[in-house]
Image 1 (tube, rainbow, N blue to C red):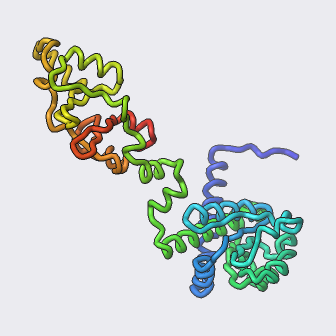
Image 2: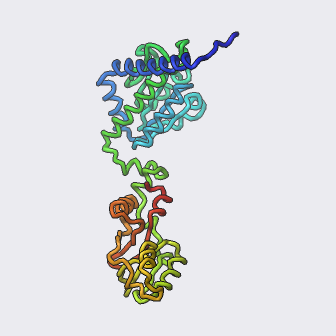
Image 3: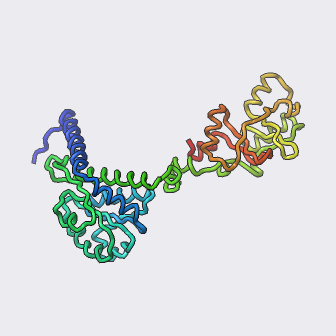
Length: 326
């Protein structure tokens, strides 16, 4: 078999044609959707008291895994079950109160259709996503959602391409519709994604990032600049609080030090004479993202965390960036 010579032009033509066919497939699928079917499917998911179980074989299985993951991350408990494994023990993962979404472009995939009677016996609602309205899977489902396309993006019209994209798009659309109907909020999303940047922005509090206790640099008003510098160096935060009777009077930072040296002020001068009064402060229960906003708006690189008038911690811009708060 000879291999045709690929050129930049032929490659770009193939890519453009494939993309166009995928878009056409999505549009074809969308036009065939009925309001009644979509509403009924979403209602089943919204009223589900158990889990949403997604099943599919081959490429449909890969799409099913993505749909299950999207549902789970947007507030609808969901997981994927391989239909072949379901026939050999994993049917126990499906129980009353669940809803099953079954994907099969042909609607006749044997591994999927063979477990339909078991799903029916459990009285579990079945949502089918197929490319054939007259298929066994579509006919047995409580709700059928059409995901067919007129032509695959594969030039042989064989490899699942446009059809899997259409199914994926419909799965995403259903997840979004259910999300909106539930009133799913950014905070809810963050709880499902605590390790991501959004989770850190929405869940991390100032108290989780600040340097407190023995790590908080503090000096009294009559401490010399030299002694204050030793404290700052020891704690490594680039600042020290000036405190009297547990009340925050001011702060002395690296910037204050530069200004002090520019003025040729002696290092045995009391810190209260060169400190910055009324420093920017924040409370420990506020979100770390709020601390970042305050720093940016105030054009400062550090904040003192207070409880009443007492300093209990400090944090700087580096601490927030290191914690993943952007």
